[in-house]
Length: 500
Ligand SMILES: *[C@@H]1O[C@H](CO)[C@@H](O)[C@H](O)[C@H]1NC(C)=O
Ligand SMILES: *[C@@H]1O[C@H](CO)[C@@H](O)[C@H](O)[C@H]1NC(C)=O
Ligand SMILES: *[C@@H]1O[C@H](CO)[C@@H](O)[C@H](O)[C@H]1NC(C)=O
Ligand SMILES: *[C@@H]1O[C@H](CO)[C@@H](O)[C@H](O)[C@H]1NC(C)=O
Ligand SMILES: *[C@@H]1O[C@H](CO)[C@@H](O)[C@H](O)[C@H]1NC(C)=O
Ligand SMILES: *[C@@H]1O[C@H](CO)[C@@H](O)[C@H](O)[C@H]1NC(C)=O
Ligand SMILES: *[C@@H]1O[C@H](CO)[C@@H](O)[C@H](O)[C@H]1NC(C)=O
Ligand SMILES: *[C@@H]1O[C@H](CO)[C@@H](O)[C@H](O)[C@H]1NC(C)=O
Image (cartoon, rainbow, N blue to C red; front, side, top):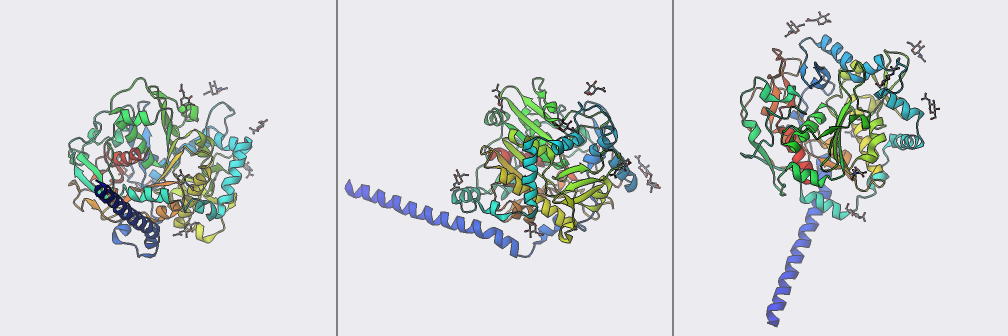
């Protein structure tokens, strides 16, 4: 009996020892991996993610869509003519519209982006304080980032579950909602069942992480976990896709008359003359849960340089988070940020965005370069959010890595295509630990902002884009940037859910 007990104890001790050794290895690997990533040469799959020059113009239907009626029917405009599509984009850009319609208007009760900016400028003490904080990040103070870097529990937890590593499998329980449904939230331009597409094999794929169990998503479980909470997406049209996907996943694509539009509480009412509001917010009364999306393509603050001039340029404050984020961060329990595809000369020029750093026009040549500006902005916003986390200990902040484009044999405006309809023809597994978006991985490293690393797993899904099946298909132009819904962004949300 005695011997048996001590034998058991010995067994326990060995198990403990093994666990300790494993943990040490795991911690060590975690510490080393980012370094390895930064010194190892870029792999070919990484290069493929960013075809063309970094300054290459990238289509974004978010800017090109026209809202033809209030029931969210949105169709892409004819974008074969580049110069006319750029002009269209200017006209439909909410910021530009607001400049023209709102700035001159004397009706101060109307909420607009511009007004938010000026409010922030005129501003409460808190906003001023936030501004000072964000300004002080002009030089990306690494001491803030380093604050928690020796917290081993956090690292082990992260390493134990790399959701980005794993494989795609066929699963009849997918998709989580019907592509014919969810009309309440899903833009018809992204609902591929409403287009001419007739292969839907891709909807049956499910992501299985290698290192961790991913709990089955159900709307009920999600809402229960989000009781009395608010989840915010802030980013470009790919962020908006993730937002619509989540709304459909929660409701199973069913009509929900009880869900309230609470956009007004966040200043997201559609301004007069605008094509659409700058975002949407919905409240689920059963669990007091709010899900919202705010459109900020560049994840930095935009400020008109001349309030009285309808054709004004905008200061694009690379080191200052969007006014919306500064204003409402205290209300968020989960935050999911992204940017990426708007960082090119064409878009900056069309939107009349002028780079500012430290409140003055940028003079740093390293930042003036588009890739440099993007990197600087991502580092700035991640640092800023990280600096706010001690104030909001309940806040879970994610930065989503870049969503890959799949233009083959050309770019979006030179006949690039993504015609393949056979899922996983380029492999089904992600086996490497390091992110395929090293820039973003580097930005969140050492912070408490979590990396939502969807790049490599989405890279395997070239068949999942809108492709040539847009509602008003334009010969020769394919959308190999946005995804069919249901589709790949559903997986991004499953990975978020697993971490709530
Ligand atoms: C799109 O624009 C091009 C060039 O302006 C024109 O030739 C073409 O007919 C247009 N297509 C549609 C569907 O409007
Ligand atoms: C594109 O649009 C511009 C402006 O409307 C026009 O001047 C130009 O001729 C058009 N190009 C083509 C190829 O249609
Ligand atoms: C100002 O806008 C608000 C909200 O849209 C509206 O209720 C009000 O009538 C407007 N006032 C004027 C003077 O246009
Ligand atoms: C700025 O705020 C002050 C104090 O709240 C207010 O009196 C003033 O009218 C505001 N100015 C503008 C331009 O909104
Ligand atoms: C480490 O991180 C965990 C989880 O985020 C937190 O609860 C704990 O307080 C941290 N410990 C230190 C020493 O920062
Ligand atoms: C709903 O949630 C918010 C926090 O998001 C909380 O302040 C509020 O009290 C909750 N309302 C109810 C009725 O519980
Ligand atoms: C702002 O724009 C107005 C109208 O175009 C112009 O009259 C004014 O001189 C501009 N102000 C500045 C400071 O550039
Ligand atoms: C990105 O920006 C950070 C912070 O400014 C800097 O340390 C890093 O070297 C930059 N990376 C690249 C690839 O430019």
